[in-house]
Image (cartoon, rainbow, N blue to C red; front, side, top):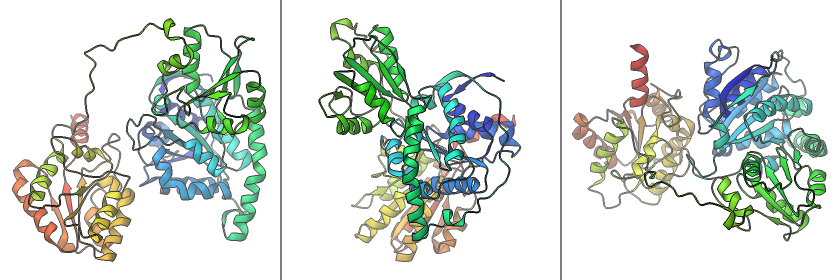
Length: 533
């Protein structure tokens, strides 16, 4: 076929999976992974149901459903951002022991520099922890090839295979060449019950099997087409080991300044130890260039000693944030050979803010007034657009830690004697991981007020379906909240006085209360209006 397409990196992942016979994708929206599932939903395969592509309520349910499809013999993919893998970790780690049946690819999008995340964690640690193979493409074409390779590799070894991408690859666009598509697998459930039932006797056997596979995984990395050397000057005393996307920055600087430094590119793990040993022994100095944590710099220093290697651990490259060509220039090029480029004065940082017309604005206005009479003014919040309530002019919230933490932190504060103990959480985050915390509060008869800001969508990541639209009150009553203390308000300026009154009444209640603030996201409302014109 060899058809060319211009796609975002995230879309390339999706296209490759469909071309390789995907039967289902499972995901919870999270930047920078969201566009993978969105692309599949918009294809003919997604629209007609040939590829299952609806959103899951969180990453754990997504992972387990993908594992179930793999158990049935079909090819599945699960997608999430890096912190989403924390949510899915229980199923993820155990799936290394059960293995898979149909090809199962786990796509995790890391976010160096924390463009839209709480931390910079590196998924490669999870791969080492679980002892699963990981592919880290360096560009869009390689992403396409990696995903197609990953499905076949997964089926050959009956293991899930991780594909790690980062924000820059996910959100940049390039032309790719597609290959002929593969038909989906037929339904063929796994009949090996001992493999899938992790009772201790089976789990011990399966863990030993995973250990026995490690030499095969290493040998596959030794032979991988994604691990290769770029040959530079034969007499160079410096070599570079570049991992995944970092290879592009290395080659940009290498070419721009005609350095001709030899480069070993690594994009398949576990580490190809023989290849690395043969490369590193040729040089006096080896620069380790990896996007994310200095995981392999630390490991290689352990193998070969500290004196030869440099990178993020010793400050040769910045310890935090995304890698850039400028960072590599400082590490590799004498300062006198570089012409400094000043940033134009017109380029100024602009802090994010809630959209004009956003219902969260009116909710925070009401919340601030309702809290004015309390000396202890603490509001626990969560992850979503409404987190911007931490910034001026609202300054309404005091915490944002992880998905669902607003509810459980408010409960813990109430247990400590804080009153009022108030949580703000969005509708999608509530169904993702807030319901279980609410059940804890009900069981403990905690004096908490939970404000669920329901804008009928997963707004922060672009307006995907929310798991409980129209059913939040019923869910709250179902987990045991007194129906008399499940209140609904509409956050509009004309309702301000009434909303403040409702909030004050529920703050005064010595038990669990829920206030649902219902108002459609202004962005999704605009899109609907345009569609209906």
